[in-house]
Length: 338
Image (cartoon, rainbow, N blue to C red):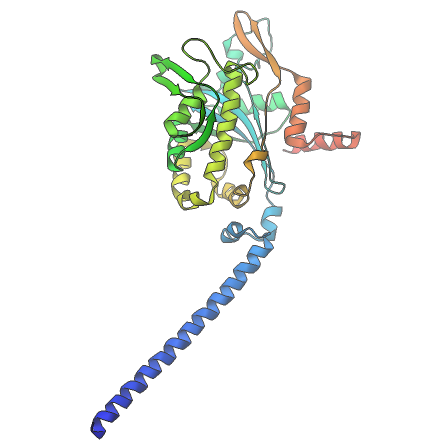
């Protein structure tokens, strides 16, 4: 090999060595940036109690402190009516959640003597045009001061369940019902199974079979059983939706929510609850039905709420059971501030 060729090869080696040296510097620089970024992220995760999702959302230790307990009236919309009315609460600080079903036939009129169908709480829904009136009626019944409502279209529930891959649910009884006027056909077998969106719609709309049989009295007959099933279905959907594997579907879930849910809540504010809601143990959600009894008035079935028992249930589910006169006063103050 000649002297000229050696010089060329030495020059080439020097260039390659220089490139490797520059590449090493860049690699080290990237590692340093990653280390700094990782350290900052680790500190942020530590600041939010180890909640990495909250850290990804840009939260700090003050975010959770500033999140109030959330009270929402959830209403299911189907064929222009709302037969599902549920008071829901969630406290991100304590990870406590509660649900209180309001029977659709609940009497809200001024005079039982002149009671008619317009005195039922679901009559003021008016096809979703005036949800505020339903909120007012529920506040009057419960003594709460709920500000937010959520109208959920049944079609949206169907699409959400299908989006998350179905819901595991223990169907309490065999269900067989047909109503051609509503294009409603229910055909489900009892037992634990994975239900798709269309089957979940059948489940939450079921009251009784074609032969007149319904849920057992222990479970809750007719509407009472349906309300219990609806609460359990909501919990099952929530449990499935907040699983980690569905984080990648959050965009589609949000799109479904925006299209099929009407609310007076600010979505930008609501998203701050997401990192904490994913840690909610759905098995600990407290659920009850508005206390009272059914009675036939003027040939119409109404649900008559028990005012004294309502106070106890509201304290238990939403405010905590009082043990002293001082705590009773505190609960009254909380009720006025919700």
